[in-house]
Structures are given as C-alpha cells and as structure tokens.
Length: 356
Image 1 (tube, rainbow, N blue to C red):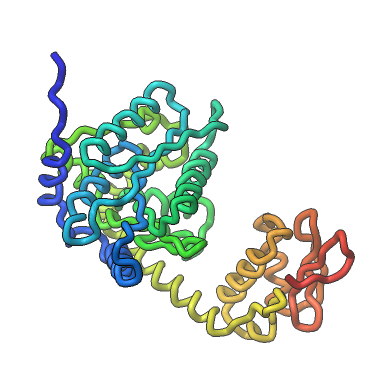
Image 2: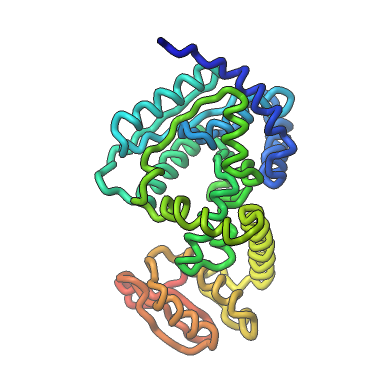
C-alpha cells in the first residue's frame, strides 16, 4: 500500500510549536536579524541573500522547516536551499537528493544541488567535508549569498570537542562549532540549533509527523566521528552523572569568549606591519598565547610558506618568542627570517627577504 504524501507545510507549522523561535541560539539569530535589517534598509526589494544547507537528515530537515515556518513576518521565504550529493553511498545518496527535492517543492523553495565529481572509494571525512564546503562557498559566491545556515546541534559540540582534544586543539578549535562564524568575503555560517540536543530534535520531528533520511554509514565505525558518537559519547554521558551535553555546550561558549578576548587583545597590539612583517617588539613580554596567534596570522598572510608541521611551528614560535635571529625553512618556497626585531618571509627563488 502506497504511503500518503506528507503535508510538509503542516509539519513545519507543528514543528515550530515544539521548537519556537526562543529555543534557537540567540547568537545566530541576532547576527541574522541584524544582517536582514541592514540589507532591508539598503535594498528594500532584494530577496534575503541566505542559504540553508539541507542533507535530508533530521537536523538539517528541522532547520529547514523551522526556517520556513518562521519566515513570514521575520525574513520571508525567498531563500536558497543547498544540497550536496557526495556520491559515496550509491542509490541511497541519490534517494537523499530526491527526498530533498520533494520537501523543497512542497514548501515552494528553490533547491540547488551539487555532486562530488571526484568522489572515490575510501574517501575520508576531511575530503568529504572539504568537497561539501567547497560547493556551498562556490554557490554562495556565484549567487551573492551572505549567510549559510547549518544544522549542527549540541551533540555535535561534544563530538567535535572530544575529537579536537585528541588532536591537541587550543581555545579557538575547542570553541567550534560556533553559532555565528565569520567567513572570508563577508559571509557567515550560522548554527541556530546549538541549543538543542539531537534527541530533542528527533522527538519534535516525530511528534510533528516528519520523516527524514538516515545515513547508513553513521551506524558503522569507519570514521573517527562515528566512533566518538557511537562508543565514546554514550559512555562519557553515563560517567558524568549529569547533563554532559549541556556542560560541553557551556564550555564551548566560555572558550569562545576567551578566544574572542585574546583575538581582540592581539588586534590592539597590531604586531603585523603593512609590509607583511611581524613586529616582535610589540609582542615582547606578552603571554605566549598572543605570540602563538600572531605567528599564525603571519603564516596565514604568507601562503607561500605552506603548512608547517607541529614541531616546525613550535620551533619557530620559540625563536619568535625570544626574538632570536634565525633563518628557518618554511616549506619548499622560502624561509622565515628573524632580523632587526622583525619576522619576514624570504622567497627562496629570489634569494632575498620579501615582505608581502
């Protein structure tokens, strides 16, 4: 017997009764509403330059339905929906794409899809994520979109934190995923569901009469995140004897506050000169955390330097901290040179110090 079609507008209306506007992360919503008001005053007739990432899973479906239902009286419904088919799960991935198309058609939304042409067997999490974000950002540039809404929730905070702890991340890394994340080109990534647990979202969707797509690979331990989600997180939550997900979310908020404060302090010091050099005198006697961030900014401004190994970065950081004259290889393209109280990039092909 054929199952009756879902009335997606009715599901959306029922969902926002269970997840109202006030349940969403204020950081994400205030950033979005400020952008909307600014654009509305500048260009009253322009449609919102926003996009919602929609995989077809529970989290992104909830975000899309809430966003659509909240639209009237707030930001309208003339936004773009982006779906990326990784092509790693064969027919199941194509079924995800068709599901997304049906939902968007029922809601009267424009869906833009992309496919990973370079998909290959054995692709890892990082490759798939890079391909997906690459598609999102290309479409945002092409369509002049400013905000991308993503369906990360509280469980994602704990998973990301545990994964990054295993790699040795600092405050900036542990503060991810952020509710409002500034991106290059004046764009933003917004995550309004970070105040909600996965179980809360799933329960609300079921009560509203929704169905969604399940990624079968999530039930396997092929990827590190899956192992954290399936093995570590449940044991950690039981061992905590309290709401560990809420605790991780609070820790993320506090780490973001600390990270923002240190970044602001570094901005005030202005150690990066217009010629691209790093003024070590402005960092003298400052906490090592400031020097570390200043060095990372300097490296970001010199892509020719390439990616330093962790040990290579720490060695260069030690030299920068004490202002020790040095000349160290940074990748295949040049050298980091400390001389006269400045750190500069020396282009190996030109055999001279070049400040960019």
